[in-house]
Length: 344
Image (tube, rainbow, N blue to C red; front, side, top):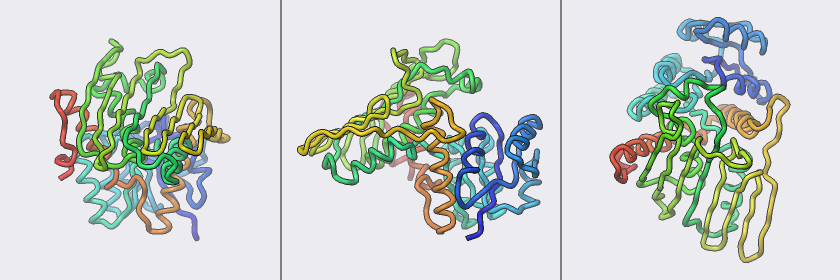
């Protein structure tokens, strides 16, 4: 099949990973880039040899010549750009968080549905090698029916040095990191019916919350805890690992620091190293995330060429985005939130 041509909008901090990954992906490549900052546009264009460069997305769509668009901008511009892609009948990948509000996200999904084009959210954490290994262990029935889980990302890593804007928003850890961890919880234990959350700001130099603890009631009866923190100082920094505990009717799964996967059941205990690959352009400790960027972009191309639904489609991500909104509502109101009601 002919390779797909893509365009990238947004040449900021994280987009560099996406551009590296597009070089490795089979079946697609980037032919045009767009950014309002001429310096970033030149830097990325020169680094990756992209001749078509735009400061205006409308102008890029008017020129056309690409089969999909990868939107790697900040959240404020997502709805306008996704709807622009829909108007131009161009399939779109949208960076997380999907939108500013759940109503915006619903409108974006509906716009692409009406236009008949694919929409996928760049929710890459579920594509990490250790997360995929846990999912595969569950699918084999290794621990029977899971009834309890914990999904934990606790770190003291200075994320603000590379992304200083994270310190400026009224919302921080749930919107930026918890969204990934909540998506993993959905991916592993299924959709959520109700949620209770508590948040706290420990770092006085930021505006938003940097600690959150969230209790999830899953539709299948399982219960889980999602706990995220950027205020946790450990003797060995685990960034950027998501740790996991699962209890099932026939055994347990533990994903611990250092990408160690332990499965315990009646047959005994098996221990596996589920470390991510260190891609040629990746660097530690980011390589876990960087590998998942490549994996989700390969998934996008494969499914787009098949005309098949994407794992993190816009419609699927509404369910994750609703958990983010519910978590903030719960923390503000001090009560449990009916997640299903938010999606109706």
